[in-house]
Image (cartoon, rainbow, N blue to C red; front, top):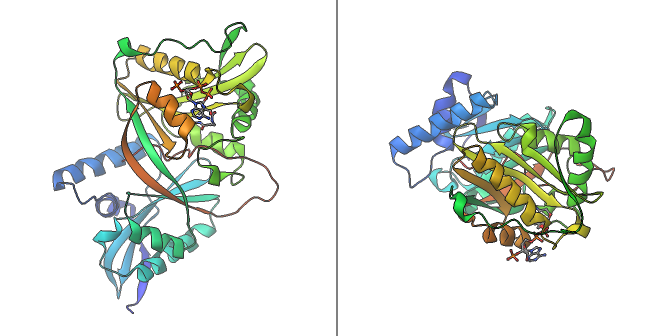
Length: 329
Ligand SMILES: CC(C)(COP(=O)(O)OP(=O)(O)OC[C@H]1O[C@@H](n2cnc3c(N)ncnc32)[C@H](O)[C@@H]1OP(=O)(O)O)[C@@H](O)C(=O)NCCC(=O)NCCS
Protein backbone atom coordinates (compact mmCIF):
# COMPACT_ATOMS: atom_id res chain seq x y z
CA UNK A 1 0.00 0.00 0.00
CA UNK A 2 1.20 3.51 -0.76
CA UNK A 3 2.20 5.85 2.07
CA UNK A 4 -1.07 7.71 2.76
CA UNK A 5 -1.14 11.02 4.58
CA UNK A 6 -2.98 14.31 4.72
CA UNK A 7 -1.42 17.74 4.41
CA UNK A 8 -3.06 20.95 5.59
CA UNK A 9 -3.51 23.27 2.60
CA UNK A 10 -2.94 27.02 2.78
CA UNK A 11 -5.97 29.38 2.73
CA UNK A 12 -4.74 30.63 -0.64
CA UNK A 13 -5.30 27.13 -2.04
CA UNK A 14 -9.03 27.18 -1.24
CA UNK A 15 -10.06 27.49 -4.88
CA UNK A 16 -7.89 24.53 -5.92
CA UNK A 17 -9.26 22.38 -3.11
CA UNK A 18 -12.87 23.36 -3.82
CA UNK A 19 -12.45 22.48 -7.50
CA UNK A 20 -11.86 18.93 -6.30
CA UNK A 21 -14.46 18.72 -3.56
CA UNK A 22 -17.33 20.44 -5.38
CA UNK A 23 -16.71 18.62 -8.64
CA UNK A 24 -19.63 16.62 -10.07
CA UNK A 25 -19.38 14.33 -13.10
CA UNK A 26 -22.13 16.13 -15.03
CA UNK A 27 -20.50 19.61 -14.80
CA UNK A 28 -18.70 21.57 -17.48
CA UNK A 29 -15.51 23.35 -16.33
CA UNK A 30 -17.34 26.70 -16.49
CA UNK A 31 -20.14 25.39 -14.27
CA UNK A 32 -17.60 24.12 -11.77
CA UNK A 33 -15.82 27.51 -11.67
CA UNK A 34 -19.15 29.26 -11.10
CA UNK A 35 -19.99 26.85 -8.29
CA UNK A 36 -16.60 27.34 -6.63
CA UNK A 37 -17.00 31.12 -6.81
CA UNK A 38 -20.52 30.90 -5.35
CA UNK A 39 -19.30 28.70 -2.53
CA UNK A 40 -16.46 31.09 -1.68
CA UNK A 41 -18.81 34.06 -1.72
CA UNK A 42 -21.28 32.18 0.50
CA UNK A 43 -18.51 31.36 2.98
CA UNK A 44 -17.33 34.98 3.01
CA UNK A 45 -20.84 36.40 3.53
CA UNK A 46 -21.61 33.87 6.26
CA UNK A 47 -18.16 34.34 7.83
CA UNK A 48 -17.41 30.64 7.51
CA UNK A 49 -13.65 30.06 7.62
CA UNK A 50 -12.15 28.10 4.70
CA UNK A 51 -8.89 27.31 6.43
CA UNK A 52 -9.53 23.67 7.39
CA UNK A 53 -8.69 21.92 4.15
CA UNK A 54 -6.33 19.14 3.21
CA UNK A 55 -4.60 17.54 0.31
CA UNK A 56 -4.88 13.76 0.50
CA UNK A 57 -1.49 12.39 -0.52
CA UNK A 58 -0.32 8.96 -1.66
CA UNK A 59 3.49 8.69 -1.62
CA UNK A 60 3.62 12.49 -1.47
CA UNK A 61 1.39 12.99 -4.54
CA UNK A 62 -1.94 14.85 -4.01
CA UNK A 63 -4.65 12.49 -5.28
CA UNK A 64 -7.62 14.05 -3.59
CA UNK A 65 -8.76 16.79 -1.20
CA UNK A 66 -11.18 17.55 1.60
CA UNK A 67 -12.65 20.69 3.18
CA UNK A 68 -14.05 20.87 6.65
CA UNK A 69 -16.32 23.87 7.11
CA UNK A 70 -17.09 24.64 10.74
CA UNK A 71 -20.20 26.58 11.64
CA UNK A 72 -21.75 28.00 14.81
CA UNK A 73 -23.41 25.31 16.91
CA UNK A 74 -20.21 23.27 17.15
CA UNK A 75 -20.75 21.27 14.01
CA UNK A 76 -18.76 20.94 10.81
CA UNK A 77 -19.44 19.65 7.33
CA UNK A 78 -16.86 17.65 5.40
CA UNK A 79 -16.76 18.09 1.64
CA UNK A 80 -15.31 15.24 -0.39
CA UNK A 81 -14.91 14.68 -4.13
CA UNK A 82 -17.32 12.08 -5.55
CA UNK A 83 -15.98 8.62 -4.64
CA UNK A 84 -15.94 7.53 -8.29
CA UNK A 85 -13.52 10.33 -9.23
CA UNK A 86 -10.75 9.13 -6.90
CA UNK A 87 -8.49 6.36 -8.14
CA UNK A 88 -7.84 4.74 -4.77
CA UNK A 89 -9.44 1.82 -2.98
CA UNK A 90 -12.14 2.35 -0.35
CA UNK A 91 -9.77 1.18 2.40
CA UNK A 92 -7.23 3.82 1.37
CA UNK A 93 -9.87 6.51 1.35
CA UNK A 94 -10.82 5.41 4.87
CA UNK A 95 -7.20 5.87 6.03
CA UNK A 96 -7.32 9.52 4.91
CA UNK A 97 -10.74 10.05 6.48
CA UNK A 98 -9.58 8.65 9.82
CA UNK A 99 -6.67 11.11 9.75
CA UNK A 100 -9.07 13.98 9.05
CA UNK A 101 -11.35 12.87 11.89
CA UNK A 102 -8.32 12.80 14.23
CA UNK A 103 -7.64 16.43 13.22
CA UNK A 104 -11.12 17.41 14.47
CA UNK A 105 -10.97 15.67 17.84
CA UNK A 106 -9.17 18.47 19.66
CA UNK A 107 -11.58 21.13 18.44
CA UNK A 108 -14.74 22.26 20.15
CA UNK A 109 -17.01 20.27 17.84
CA UNK A 110 -19.89 17.94 18.65
CA UNK A 111 -20.87 16.73 15.21
CA UNK A 112 -19.20 16.03 11.89
CA UNK A 113 -21.49 15.68 8.89
CA UNK A 114 -20.93 14.76 5.29
CA UNK A 115 -23.39 15.06 2.41
CA UNK A 116 -23.06 12.60 -0.45
CA UNK A 117 -24.66 12.48 -3.86
CA UNK A 118 -27.12 9.57 -4.23
CA UNK A 119 -25.27 6.42 -5.29
CA UNK A 120 -21.87 7.50 -3.95
CA UNK A 121 -21.30 4.11 -2.33
CA UNK A 122 -17.51 4.41 -2.23
CA UNK A 123 -17.46 7.50 -0.02
CA UNK A 124 -20.31 6.05 2.08
CA UNK A 125 -18.31 2.85 2.70
CA UNK A 126 -15.09 4.75 3.47
CA UNK A 127 -16.92 7.10 5.86
CA UNK A 128 -18.44 4.07 7.64
CA UNK A 129 -14.97 2.61 8.06
CA UNK A 130 -13.88 5.93 9.58
CA UNK A 131 -16.71 5.82 12.16
CA UNK A 132 -19.53 7.71 10.39
CA UNK A 133 -23.07 6.38 10.26
CA UNK A 134 -25.96 6.93 7.89
CA UNK A 135 -28.35 9.59 9.20
CA UNK A 136 -30.89 10.23 6.46
CA UNK A 137 -31.53 10.90 2.85
CA UNK A 138 -32.37 14.59 2.60
CA UNK A 139 -34.83 15.74 -0.03
CA UNK A 140 -34.43 19.37 -1.18
CA UNK A 141 -37.71 20.98 -2.17
CA UNK A 142 -38.54 24.36 -3.60
CA UNK A 143 -41.56 26.45 -4.38
CA UNK A 144 -41.70 29.12 -7.06
CA UNK A 145 -42.91 32.68 -6.77
CA UNK A 146 -46.54 32.56 -7.84
CA UNK A 147 -48.30 34.39 -5.06
CA UNK A 148 -51.67 33.78 -6.69
CA UNK A 149 -51.39 30.06 -6.07
CA UNK A 150 -50.74 30.34 -2.33
CA UNK A 151 -52.98 27.82 -0.60
CA UNK A 152 -55.88 29.33 1.31
CA UNK A 153 -54.99 29.94 4.97
CA UNK A 154 -55.93 26.83 6.93
CA UNK A 155 -58.37 27.09 9.78
CA UNK A 156 -56.38 25.40 12.59
CA UNK A 157 -58.31 25.64 15.86
CA UNK A 158 -60.21 28.68 14.60
CA UNK A 159 -62.26 28.96 17.78
CA UNK A 160 -59.11 29.82 19.78
CA UNK A 161 -57.22 33.06 19.29
CA UNK A 162 -54.02 32.98 17.25
CA UNK A 163 -50.99 35.04 18.19
CA UNK A 164 -47.86 35.33 16.11
CA UNK A 165 -44.76 36.11 18.14
CA UNK A 166 -41.42 36.79 16.58
CA UNK A 167 -38.14 35.85 18.14
CA UNK A 168 -36.19 38.21 20.37
CA UNK A 169 -33.65 37.77 23.13
CA UNK A 170 -36.36 37.94 25.80
CA UNK A 171 -38.36 35.00 24.44
CA UNK A 172 -35.38 32.88 23.45
CA UNK A 173 -36.26 30.33 26.18
CA UNK A 174 -39.86 30.01 24.86
CA UNK A 175 -38.53 29.22 21.39
CA UNK A 176 -35.99 26.75 22.81
CA UNK A 177 -38.68 24.92 24.85
CA UNK A 178 -41.10 24.83 21.94
CA UNK A 179 -38.49 23.62 19.44
CA UNK A 180 -37.52 20.82 21.83
CA UNK A 181 -41.14 19.81 22.35
CA UNK A 182 -41.60 19.50 18.57
CA UNK A 183 -38.86 16.85 18.44
CA UNK A 184 -41.11 14.32 20.17
CA UNK A 185 -42.27 11.76 17.65
CA UNK A 186 -40.53 13.66 14.86
CA UNK A 187 -39.58 11.77 11.70
CA UNK A 188 -37.04 14.41 10.69
CA UNK A 189 -33.55 12.95 11.13
CA UNK A 190 -34.45 11.05 14.34
CA UNK A 191 -30.88 9.68 14.46
CA UNK A 192 -29.76 13.11 15.73
CA UNK A 193 -31.75 12.58 18.95
CA UNK A 194 -29.81 13.62 22.02
CA UNK A 195 -26.58 14.39 20.18
CA UNK A 196 -26.51 18.15 20.59
CA UNK A 197 -27.52 20.75 23.10
CA UNK A 198 -30.55 22.83 22.08
CA UNK A 199 -28.41 26.00 22.28
CA UNK A 200 -26.04 24.55 19.68
CA UNK A 201 -29.00 23.60 17.51
CA UNK A 202 -30.39 27.15 17.68
CA UNK A 203 -26.96 28.66 16.97
CA UNK A 204 -26.76 26.38 13.90
CA UNK A 205 -30.22 27.44 12.70
CA UNK A 206 -29.29 31.13 13.11
CA UNK A 207 -26.19 30.58 11.00
CA UNK A 208 -28.05 28.76 8.21
CA UNK A 209 -28.54 31.98 6.23
CA UNK A 210 -29.21 35.67 6.92
CA UNK A 211 -30.80 35.61 10.36
CA UNK A 212 -33.59 38.13 10.93
CA UNK A 213 -35.57 37.67 14.19
CA UNK A 214 -38.74 38.92 12.49
CA UNK A 215 -38.61 35.79 10.34
CA UNK A 216 -38.60 33.38 13.28
CA UNK A 217 -42.23 32.96 14.26
CA UNK A 218 -43.93 31.16 17.11
CA UNK A 219 -47.65 30.51 16.86
CA UNK A 220 -49.76 30.55 20.02
CA UNK A 221 -53.19 28.96 19.73
CA UNK A 222 -55.12 30.08 22.80
CA UNK A 223 -52.50 29.83 25.55
CA UNK A 224 -50.53 27.03 23.96
CA UNK A 225 -47.28 27.52 22.05
CA UNK A 226 -48.36 25.30 19.18
CA UNK A 227 -45.54 25.48 16.66
CA UNK A 228 -42.89 27.56 15.02
CA UNK A 229 -41.41 28.33 11.63
CA UNK A 230 -37.82 29.58 11.32
CA UNK A 231 -36.98 31.28 8.04
CA UNK A 232 -33.72 32.53 6.72
CA UNK A 233 -32.78 34.47 3.62
CA UNK A 234 -30.19 32.93 1.34
CA UNK A 235 -27.21 35.33 1.23
CA UNK A 236 -26.61 34.66 -2.49
CA UNK A 237 -30.02 34.19 -4.07
CA UNK A 238 -33.41 35.84 -3.80
CA UNK A 239 -34.77 32.89 -1.92
CA UNK A 240 -35.93 32.10 1.58
CA UNK A 241 -35.14 28.87 3.32
CA UNK A 242 -37.33 27.14 5.87
CA UNK A 243 -34.64 26.28 8.38
CA UNK A 244 -37.09 24.53 10.67
CA UNK A 245 -40.83 24.06 11.05
CA UNK A 246 -42.28 22.08 13.94
CA UNK A 247 -45.59 21.52 15.72
CA UNK A 248 -45.87 20.17 19.26
CA UNK A 249 -47.26 16.62 19.25
CA UNK A 250 -50.66 17.28 20.80
CA UNK A 251 -51.37 20.01 18.23
CA UNK A 252 -50.51 17.97 15.12
CA UNK A 253 -52.95 17.00 12.36
CA UNK A 254 -55.15 20.04 13.01
CA UNK A 255 -53.80 22.29 10.29
CA UNK A 256 -51.20 24.08 12.48
CA UNK A 257 -48.30 23.01 10.22
CA UNK A 258 -50.15 24.28 7.15
CA UNK A 259 -50.94 27.56 8.93
CA UNK A 260 -47.28 28.09 9.85
CA UNK A 261 -46.22 27.33 6.31
CA UNK A 262 -48.81 29.67 4.84
CA UNK A 263 -47.55 32.50 7.06
CA UNK A 264 -43.95 31.74 6.09
CA UNK A 265 -44.78 31.84 2.38
CA UNK A 266 -46.63 35.13 2.81
CA UNK A 267 -43.59 36.64 4.55
CA UNK A 268 -41.19 35.44 1.89
CA UNK A 269 -43.22 36.67 -1.06
CA UNK A 270 -44.08 39.97 0.64
CA UNK A 271 -40.32 40.54 0.91
CA UNK A 272 -40.01 40.00 -2.84
CA UNK A 273 -38.19 36.68 -2.62
CA UNK A 274 -38.64 34.51 -5.66
CA UNK A 275 -38.32 31.07 -4.13
CA UNK A 276 -38.82 29.23 -0.87
CA UNK A 277 -36.70 26.16 -0.19
CA UNK A 278 -36.58 23.47 2.47
CA UNK A 279 -34.66 20.26 3.13
CA UNK A 280 -36.57 17.35 4.61
CA UNK A 281 -35.74 13.81 5.63
CA UNK A 282 -37.12 11.64 2.78
CA UNK A 283 -38.68 9.35 5.39
CA UNK A 284 -40.66 12.23 6.93
CA UNK A 285 -44.02 11.50 5.32
CA UNK A 286 -46.04 14.12 7.27
CA UNK A 287 -43.63 16.90 6.27
CA UNK A 288 -43.50 15.76 2.63
CA UNK A 289 -47.32 15.78 2.57
CA UNK A 290 -47.38 19.26 4.11
CA UNK A 291 -44.90 20.74 1.61
CA UNK A 292 -46.35 18.80 -1.34
CA UNK A 293 -49.83 20.16 -0.64
CA UNK A 294 -48.39 23.69 -0.60
CA UNK A 295 -46.82 23.32 -4.06
CA UNK A 296 -43.22 22.42 -3.17
CA UNK A 297 -41.43 20.12 -5.61
CA UNK A 298 -38.28 18.05 -4.99
CA UNK A 299 -35.18 19.04 -6.96
CA UNK A 300 -32.22 17.28 -5.29
CA UNK A 301 -31.33 14.54 -2.86
CA UNK A 302 -28.31 14.02 -0.62
CA UNK A 303 -27.33 11.21 1.69
CA UNK A 304 -26.19 12.48 5.11
CA UNK A 305 -23.57 10.64 7.15
CA UNK A 306 -22.68 11.81 10.66
CA UNK A 307 -20.04 11.27 13.29
CA UNK A 308 -20.86 12.52 16.81
CA UNK A 309 -17.61 13.66 18.40
CA UNK A 310 -18.78 13.82 21.98
CA UNK A 311 -22.08 12.03 22.51
CA UNK A 312 -24.02 13.42 25.44
CA UNK A 313 -25.17 11.02 28.10
CA UNK A 314 -27.29 13.36 30.23
CA UNK A 315 -30.48 13.01 28.18
CA UNK A 316 -30.33 16.69 27.24
CA UNK A 317 -31.38 17.77 23.77
CA UNK A 318 -33.61 16.00 21.30
CA UNK A 319 -33.82 15.32 17.65
CA UNK A 320 -33.53 18.23 15.33
CA UNK A 321 -33.64 19.14 11.78
CA UNK A 322 -30.25 19.03 10.17
CA UNK A 323 -29.27 22.65 10.77
CA UNK A 324 -26.56 24.01 8.54
CA UNK A 325 -27.01 21.33 5.89
CA UNK A 326 -29.78 22.71 3.88
CA UNK A 327 -27.89 24.87 1.40
CA UNK A 328 -27.37 22.48 -1.48
CA UNK A 329 -24.30 23.43 -3.53
C1 LIG B 1 -44.58 17.79 9.83
C2 LIG B 1 -45.45 18.56 10.82
C3 LIG B 1 -44.90 19.98 10.91
C4 LIG B 1 -46.89 18.60 10.27
O1 LIG B 1 -47.64 19.48 11.12
P1 LIG B 1 -49.21 19.30 11.31
O2 LIG B 1 -49.69 20.44 12.11
O3 LIG B 1 -49.51 17.95 11.84
O4 LIG B 1 -49.70 19.37 9.80
P2 LIG B 1 -51.15 19.73 9.30
O5 LIG B 1 -52.17 19.25 10.28
O6 LIG B 1 -51.20 21.17 8.93
O7 LIG B 1 -51.25 18.84 8.00
C5 LIG B 1 -50.61 19.22 6.82
C6 LIG B 1 -50.59 18.05 5.83
O8 LIG B 1 -49.74 17.02 6.35
C7 LIG B 1 -50.48 15.80 6.47
N1 LIG B 1 -50.05 15.10 7.66
C8 LIG B 1 -49.92 15.61 8.91
N2 LIG B 1 -49.53 14.63 9.73
C9 LIG B 1 -49.43 13.51 9.00
C10 LIG B 1 -49.06 12.16 9.28
N3 LIG B 1 -48.69 11.79 10.52
N4 LIG B 1 -49.04 11.26 8.26
C11 LIG B 1 -49.37 11.63 7.01
N5 LIG B 1 -49.74 12.89 6.67
C12 LIG B 1 -49.77 13.80 7.65
C13 LIG B 1 -51.92 16.24 6.59
O9 LIG B 1 -52.80 15.19 6.21
C14 LIG B 1 -51.97 17.40 5.66
O10 LIG B 1 -51.99 16.92 4.33
P3 LIG B 1 -53.08 17.45 3.27
O11 LIG B 1 -52.77 18.93 3.08
O12 LIG B 1 -52.82 16.63 2.06
O13 LIG B 1 -54.40 17.23 3.95
C15 LIG B 1 -45.48 17.88 12.22
O14 LIG B 1 -45.75 16.51 12.06
C16 LIG B 1 -44.18 18.05 13.00
O15 LIG B 1 -43.96 19.04 13.68
N6 LIG B 1 -43.27 17.07 12.92
C17 LIG B 1 -42.00 17.15 13.63
C18 LIG B 1 -41.05 18.20 13.03
C19 LIG B 1 -40.90 18.02 11.54
O16 LIG B 1 -40.88 16.93 11.01
N7 LIG B 1 -40.70 19.17 10.83
C20 LIG B 1 -40.56 19.16 9.39
C21 LIG B 1 -39.18 19.42 8.99
S1 LIG B 1 -38.90 21.11 8.52
